Image (cartoon, rainbow, N blue to C red; front, side, top):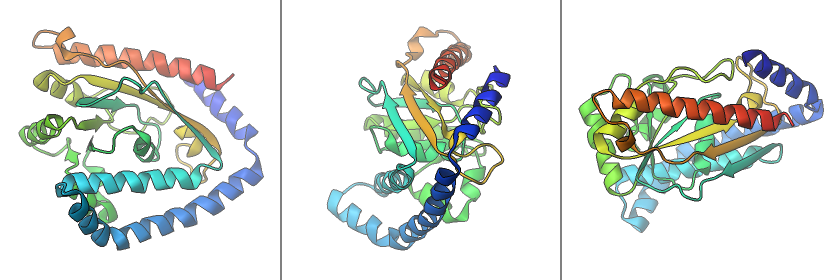
Length: 265
């Protein structure tokens, strides 16, 4: 499968119009920088105004503004990057979303989800990006690598009580080959402990938008597909979370294979 994925990437690269590639990079990187800088400068005022208007807590206000920020980046690259969101009709909170990880841009495309009230559960390294750390803390994002599990559970339970969503990248890191990596157990353990269903998400195309180890962006077709919710009650026993993890991974691997095959047509 890895060989076919690598060949698909080479094929997509050959199809890329050099003019499109140059335009995409000349357009995106300056605008991305301006958007990020403008967002940081305007954030104090935006946070205060949004809180006064909505009456929400600081975490929810911050998550709302982060979603707007991410959606703005999607809009910036939209002239040369096609995007589709598929099969989200029956997705509703509370839920735990798990999504495969292909690119730095995966998290930005989560702004296209049908809800903005998403708490990201990630490893320690994103909290080291000093220009985002404050916002991640305000949004109550979770460090599942170095954080306390009891605190993680409490934060998630609060979110679930208001029909919120917690999102995991269960591979823990970006795939360098496009192949689905082994899953960590955190999302599935949380599902079993809280009774909240898992909603698997499959994303394709972001590895063509920004190939592994590359700096230049390429035109791509990005697709985000939701799979049916998985009920933790279907996996009883002390090791139910492990069985759930295997079942969800197998389902996602099969769906990704189908989506990648469709993209080659």
